[in-house]
Image (cartoon, rainbow, N blue to C red; front, side):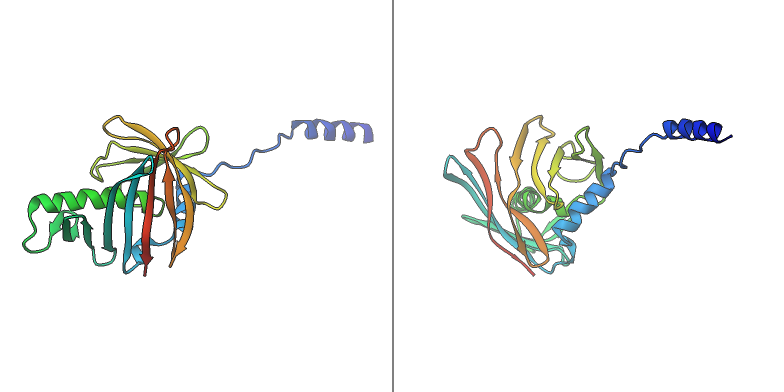
Length: 211
């Protein structure tokens, strides 16, 4: 009887298959990154200057002052300043020319995404999935100026992004680092992006304030 018991135990042990660790789903990964970035919509004001450089030469410099709770944003650059009193649909302050409203809105949507995308991955209309390497892939369902864009984030152990790759609705592709993370109030933001494969293109942020 003892021999039979040992044999049965041996068979049972042989049948035990070690379980692989559960793989997190896309929403878990996105929530972790959003938490690491911080509660963007809880802030009274987020101000920043968006700067583009090519081979050390400055190509663009735009300033934005956004009230997430109030829904207003003032965008300014050389020879231009416009205040939007509403973002969706974009609505200018009294007397604002329609073309200025469109230009300011487009600039803010683009520039702020380079700064705040990790905080906004749980926004309505954002579809989330994981690729075969476990990277977070974002696509969009009828939201944004170019809903055909896709973005793929590589995320570090701290939950913050280290780089992203994108395919735009236009078909253009690219990849940039997400570096220079710093804390501004309740938010942890990347202040510098360098093009991968073309280090001459740099997007950086100056004069960031969050309150």
